[in-house]
Length: 124
Image (cartoon, rainbow, N blue to C red):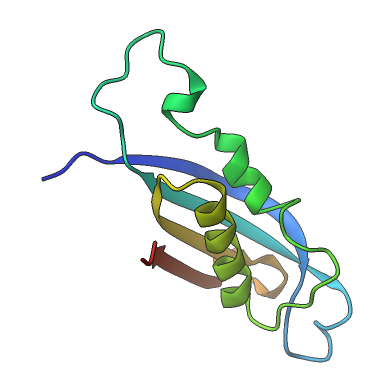
């Protein structure tokens, strides 16, 4: 089994232009986004390791919030997840895989999580 480093940011609430139904289009929809990013770890992490030995967790949060274009309508939340994955791959060559879970908060009737999870591995 090989070593892995998984960075996580969970339950980021953000509004995104998304949806295919008339009641969804034209206005942002509330989403809850969680991200897991797999990085190649270094051999050891000593107490004085600098931030460059890992990745800033806020980069993940940014990809799920301010990093999403405000003027683009994503028909599917799968497209939102794909955009987040690609953003993290472009930011850092050490990111090997990204998992994005998105819950559509506006369609929950009894507190259930309705949404999807997309996992992408770096290509090439």
